[in-house]
Length: 227
View 1 (cartoon, rainbow, N blue to C red):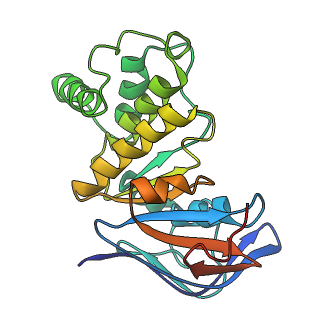
View 2: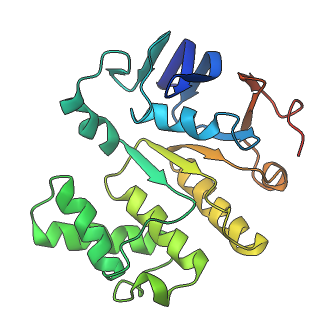
């Protein structure tokens, strides 16, 4: 199984403050990983380190074919094209339709052929159950529909990895379950998924590997994590 992420003895810092020490973490292709931890435990900082938003100054940190200790600024956009990022607060452009939001991302990542852009948008919207909603603006959609559009946006460049930071945090339980079910189906298709969450019921419905941020350490399992 192909290894996508390989961290050894990595310190994760927010500015000068170390939030996680001596992180050892590996991710293989097709894995679904739940990332647990209380607010401020380092979850988001760890996720941001994977796409070089949080720099790494200690340890060995590799993702795909990139060394995160030495990655050049000009290479970061190419790294990020391999990763689909899903935020809790959607971050959709409110003055544009769903179609225009997705066109913006594709053009920003180098797509130029209008026909191919349209075909790719049709494909990802269909994959997330939003095939007939491209003409709508974000405010015309429910929270669950907006998050499906965000997942579609994350799929645009056929990423090898999806990073989801509390993707169900602003959704009701039933809608949240539908979002995790969708991510789980995407993972079954071969895309690795790392999802930060506080919801323990998801593990029972959609089994995956669990890692926890606790006491400045990243550990396997959820036994150390208490609500």
